[in-house]
Length: 105
Image (cartoon, rainbow, N blue to C red):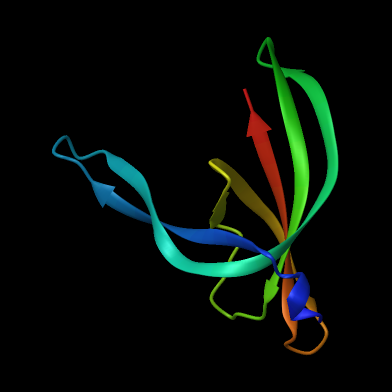
């Protein structure tokens, strides 16, 4: 992996669950790590969902290898939140490709 291409700074966020004063579970996100990444824009489509037009972008983030990232996490980059939908290893512990979706309302 060419680490010189990791030229974007992203924040990986993990979810935690807390209980409010009414006993309801509340999901909050906190920073797991801030890392350098390479970004590949894959596709963008518009579709109707629940009677609203919604844009869906597919973006891949390539980062150095880590063992603590799951599909329950998300990525914050450029004032947007990207849901991780797939993780694939590059080489033998060289890096990770994080497949994400950005939903714009």
